[in-house]
Structures are given as structure tokens and as C-alpha cells.
Length: 237
Image (cartoon, rainbow, N blue to C red; front, side):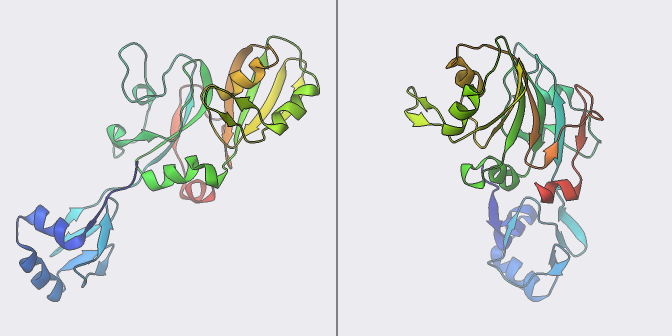
């Protein structure tokens, strides 16, 4: 999903139902402001978050929203679903945030809990999900059978998935206890963690995403709760 852009003259022409010639005259008369600055270029490129006013009347003032959610098991990572509650259904956000305008920054399976991010800023979400950015995602994994040191090397080497004909990127695995490990990935292949442990015939009992980059799901955000990210968190990740 790419954040759509448009030429300023096209936007003003459509919004005000006037010709682009009239828009050029308005620009010459310094009547149009973009993000608080007088616009004078008909080729000026704007996007959905550009603040635009004409004669001190606001034509567009969309705000970017960035949301952290502690997703419970049993909630689907989707905006619509006929059978299950979705992440949008359980969001509790300030009134100025339009939930229907949000999209997911990556997904978690129905039976996986933990950190989920949502936004209406597709440039930000594309940056986080791009493989080239190598943003780490940290998971706590509970296994049915005991772990041993062989897992660490196997995850670090990456694993070949015949169905996709790809080898996963190296993943970090830290053994916490006999049945619990922390796994860090920089990609998100289909059921990747479950499939990687499946190579050892060791079923995943529980999967919980703890962090995405520098954003950590702390105990302060209870299961099912959500909050807006701070500007520092948005920039820092």
C-alpha cells in the first residue's frame, strides 16, 4: 500500500470545482497555504497528510495515526471477518482517530498474541515491513518438547522452505528454559516460527510477539488494550 500523492492544482481544482487556470491565479495571489507555507508552484506534490487551506479555510487536515495493540489469542489480524473479532473491533482510541482508516503493519495468527501495530500512514508501515530495513521482531515461544543447543545453530543458519523455494534469513534463538525460547526474526514468512520448530518435530504451544524494533510490549498495556504511539516512538523505530 503506497501513500497516494497528487499535484496541488489538481487537488484544489477538484475540491473547489474550479479550473486549474483559476488555481494558478490563486497561487499568484498567495491565497493557498500548504503546511502553513504559502504555495506558489502548480507542480507542488501533496499527500493525504498535507495541511491545505485556501483563504484561511481548511480544505484538508488529516492526521497520521500510529497505534500499539496488545492482541489477545482468538482475535484475527484483519479489518473485517465474518467469524471472529478483529483487531479493529477491540481498539479503544481517542475520538479523533478514524479506526476504519487504519491498516495493519504486519499480522499475527489467530492463536498468536502480542504486539500489533496499526496506522493510516502507508509510508511508515512499508518502511517497517520492507525486508531491506531488517526490522527485528521478537517472539516468546513455548514448546511442547524440550529444547537443546542444536536449535540455536539451525535457526542461525536459516532453513530452506521447499514450498516457497526460499531459505529463511538467519534467526536468533535464545533458550530461556527447557520449553521456552526467545526468537528474533527480520522477516515474516507464512507460519515461519511454527514451521522452523516443526523441523525438530516440536509443536509450538504458545506464541507471543514481544517487540518490533525498538517498540516493546510492556506489562502496562494489558491484553486487549491499545494506545497511540508517541512521536518519539514513531520516529525511533
